[in-house]
Length: 226
Image 1 (spheres, rainbow, N blue to C red):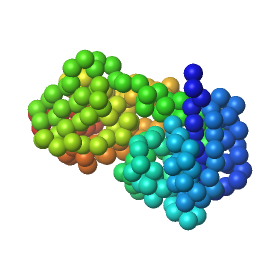
Image 2: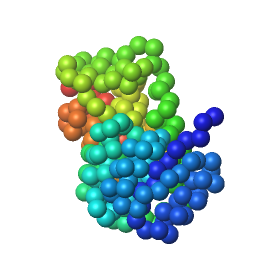
Image 3: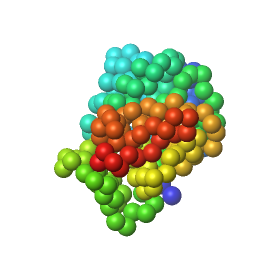
């Protein structure tokens, strides 16, 4: 199997070296950049399968780096930050990040999230024989294309996987932990805020009523609004 490439864009040398060493030990090919412009150039030259991207970088911050590398081609992005604010998370997801970890983090969890992101980007969702059509919403898993009210909607791999999971059984209410396991591939309860933030991202792109919240339980696709 071809070695998967990971770009690590991080300005703290100790963190960059630690992340790179762990990922190389797991069999990944890793290259590093220590600032925003260098990270953009690295992604252009190296064409990674996944980017581990610090939010606070010299030259260009992580949000602008994410915007620029996503213009060239979509690549899964795991964003790192020393801050743990809801605003940072929302903006990061809005510019194309797929997941988010706050420092300090467990190297084992970072590797688990990297592997889950790669699986999600490479693996088409199940039940892809026919496009799903729910009112004005069309979801084609074979081409990973989403149309809403006749317009194409660009979704990240994670957003697509979440929407497809909800759309396969729109009558089912999914709890956050179940979604973390079945969409993100995580076997731990951490990260439930990530589910909420991706739901909000889908609502921004598809309409505020497309996913309903069942308080105390989780989320379901609301077909009555489509």
